Length: 458
Image 1 (cartoon, rainbow, N blue to C red):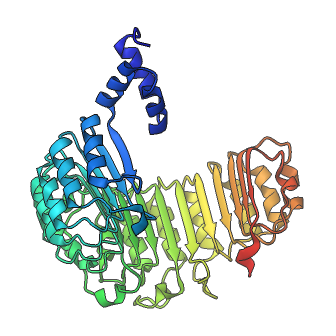
Image 2 (cartoon, rainbow, N blue to C red; image 1 turned 30 degrees about the vertical axis):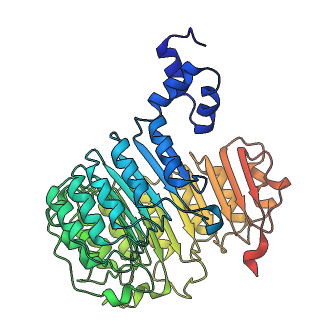
C-alpha cells in the first residue's frame, strides 16, 4: 500500500462513500491515513462527541480541509454529557478555513455568541439551523454580515428568531438562492417582504407556518414586485385568499418549475388561473387540501375543475401532478371532479401521478389512464373507489413502470393477477392493503416491496 501512486490512493478513497469505510481504510497504513486526513471534506458528529469541545478540536486538527460539518444532537439527554456550546463554533471558525456548509440540529447550548464566531467564515455558503432554540435574529444578522457569500439558509423551529433584519441584509447582498423557513413561530408571511431586491436572485422558497399560529398572521397582499429566478415554491399552512398573503407569487413567477401547496387556506380558482397564465415552464404541481381550505376564499367553491382545466391549458410541460386530502381530514364533499382531473392528464405530458384520499377517482378514471401515453409512475393511497376491475387496466398503460398501492381497500390479489409474469413493472410497492397478500404480489415486478400494518383501520 505504501508504494501505490498518489492518484490511485485518492481514487480508492473517493469510492468509499461511508465515513466508517474510510476510517477502516485509514487503518491499513500511515500513508493512507495521512492522505485521508488531508482530503476528508465532511464530518457528521453529535451525541458521541465527548468531551465535546476537546473532541471537536481534535477532529479539526486531524481534518484541516473540512468543507461540510453537521452537528446533530437529536435524541440527546443529560446523561450523554454536555453538548457542544459556543466555544465549539469558535473552533470551527478558527480551524476550518474551507468551511462552506454547516448544519446544526437540536443544539440547545448554541447561542448568538456562537453564531457571531462564525462571521469570520467568509467562505460559508450554506447554513441550516434545525431547532436551535437559543439563537435569535441578532445572532443570524451577525453571521450574515460576515458571511457575504451565503446562498442557502434554512431555519426550522428556531422559536426565538423574532427580528428579520438579517433577511433585509441578505436581500441587499443579493446572493441568496435558497431560503427555507419552517415553524419559526415569530416569522410570518409578511416578513418575507423584507428580502426586497433579493427576490430577483432567489431560486427556491420553502415556507411553512406553524398551524397553531397562522391565523394571527393574516394580512393583505404582499408587495413582491419581481421574482424572475424562482423555480421552486413550497408553501404550507399559509393564508392565500384572493388579494391576501403569498397568493400574489403564483401570478408573477414566470420561471416556476415546481409548486407545492399544503393546507393553504383560501387558495382558489383565481390563484390557479394566475399560476397557469404565467408559469409556462411548470413541471411539477402538488396540492394537499384540507376541509378548511375553503374558509378564507371569496369564491364559495374554492378549487373547482376550472383550476385543473386552466393548468391543463396553460402548463404544457407539466410532468408530475400530486393531489391529496389531508390524512383523516378528507371532506365529505369536493368541488374537484374526475372530469377536471382527466382534462389535466389528457392535455399534459404527465409522467408521475399521485392521488391520496381522492374518492372521486374510480374505475372509470383508471380506464381513462390508458390514454396517458407517457405515464410511468402511478401512486394510489386510500383511493377507496378503485376495485379489481379498475386495477386490471394497468396492463394496458403503455409506459407504466412503477406502481404504489397503499391502504386501498377495494383491491385484491385477483385484480393484480393479470400482471403476474407480464414483466411490465420495474417497481411495485404495496403497503397496508388488507386484501392483497404477499403471495399475490410475487412475480409482478422486478423489485417488489410489501408491508402490512392494519392499525390505520382502527
